[in-house]
Image (cartoon, rainbow, N blue to C red; front, side):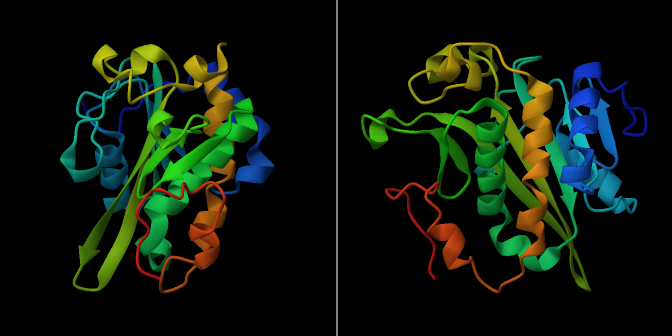
Length: 231
């Protein structure tokens, strides 16, 4: 299927994005939706290669080849998760976009649902471990992939996968994974989650230090038992 033939954006997603339009700036402008695709990162990268601006967002109902860090497969059951990728062209922010994207996801989910989350270095968003670190379960993941040319880094695709319901991950991962609806014990509005994560994304694209900022590493969302990078 050609990437230039997206499906109509579902009404709930369109209404949620419209409601936060003034707050999300260029994020989700434009947004391309696919009922099914291989990987939203791959589709977003194809758009970026054609000159798509920063903020271009690709959303899928399901992915047939979703992936996470180190090439691991990301289970993307239809209608059970939120799978999307954003084109970022603020290349000076690239070294810490994965961690910054995790902060955007945690803050966006909290704003949309009230569920508190934490970030486990480098790219996992996990439930809070009230009973200790061993009780934290992965709820979302972030994958940043860049493209270079002889002139340097051209763009970064920030891919995000969020478990919405329990069917978004295999049963055998239930001891290590969770979902928003499992944690809350109630259904949620997926469109509002997407919208709020996009609202929290612009700030992570506008900072441009040469190393991961201390304020981000010291953010209370970042779990202390995870491995931190050199400062």
